[in-house]
Each structure stands twice: as C-alpha cells, then as structure tokens.
Length: 175
Image (cartoon, rainbow, N blue to C red; front, side, top):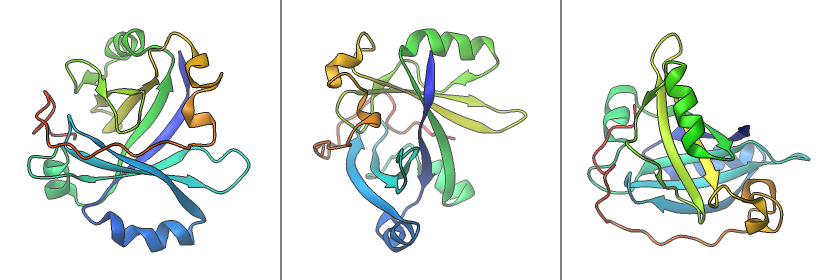
C-alpha cells in the first residue's frame, strides 16, 4: 500500500553550494548517508511546518561511476525523483509494472538511511517520471521504529559510513 510522499529528490554535483538556499527556504538538515549500491551521497532536509513533510533529498555522486553521472551530464542539476513510502515493496513494484512503469532495479537494495529499502521505477510517457519506492524496516511492522516509521518521527538517524563497495547498481544510470 502507498503510504505517502517520503521525499523529493534533487540531483546536484555541489550539495554544499545548496546549503544557503535550503536554509533560506526554512529547511534544516536532518541526516545524511551513502547509498553504496548507487554510489550516491544523500542529504535529507526537513521543511519547517507542523508535519515537516515531505523531506527534500539532495543526491550527488559519491565517487566515480555514480548512478547519477549520466543524468548530470545530460540534464544537469534539478528535480530527480519522487519517493513514495510503501508498506511492502514487492507488491507495489508488481502493481506499478502492470501500470506501465519500467523497473530500473532488478531487486530492492539498501537506501541511504538505516532500515531503508528502495527500488526505482520509471514512467517514460507521458511524464518522464522517476519514482523511488521506499520501505522502512522489513515491512512487517512499524513497531520496529517505536510504533511509527522513521520518516514520521523526529528523524534522529545516525550517519551511515561512506562505502565504495561495488553493488549491482554501481554504474547504473538513474535516469
């Protein structure tokens, strides 16, 4: 089941250069991590307001062979993807395939945050839309996170370490 927008991804090769703009927009940085399978560095920013959602994720290459290299070369910085939180990834991936979305990933992989599992899909026409499905924990119970998913609580995540490990997605172009 789709649970709502988790975050909106913006691609850049200069995340530090966006800090003044994000701050001017009333956003504060919550956490960051590396999605090693994609070789992508991720910073999660929270808007001010009562709900603090959706988050904005700044994604940038974390080294040579990043999944973002092709996108940045073709399109430059800007809007990259919309991430939808789901309770179970596999059924939603199957449902979206049936609705005309093309899978980008062969199988879900670890995201940039602890307990985050992700898979990308793409709808070429009529939108040219890259969608990241996000599942927190194993999808069996939100009690793993104190009764609520991490995206809906105080966002006190620990930083993940930078990894240069080869993943099945390394070198894969994310639109």
